[in-house]
Length: 159
Image (cartoon, rainbow, N blue to C red; front, side):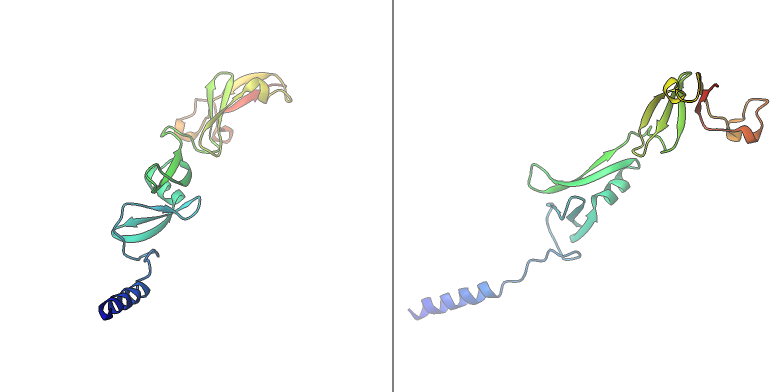
C-alpha cells in the first residue's frame, strides 16, 4: 500500500510540474506542421524555431507578381499560405496599350489588362479615330512629333 501511495504521489507531482507548451515566436520546435493565426498570418517551424509571418509577405517574396494571399488549413491538417498572382506578363497599374487600332488596354490595380473599345471611350466626346500607340523619347518617336507631344497610348477622339 505504501508503494502505491508513493507512486500515486509521484504521478500527481509529475503531472503538475509539466512544462508549458512552447509555441511563442522564437521558441524551439521540431515539426513540419504549421498553423494559421488569422486569415493572413501563419506560424511555422523555420530552422527549428517558431516564426510568425504574414502570407502577404511570404507570397511577395516567392512571387514577384503576387496580388493576394491568405492562410488556410490543408488536407493534412497543417496550414499553408496560398498566393494569388498575376502571370509574369502582367502589367503595371496605370499602364495603357493599344490592343488593335480600335481597342485600348488599361492595366488595373490587380495587374490585369482591361479592354476598352475606343468607340465607348469616345462616346461623349466625338467619333472614335482609333487607338493611338504611346510615343516617348525612349521609343525614338517618329519624325515630326516634338517631345512636348509625347503621350501614353490612348483612344483618339474627334469632334
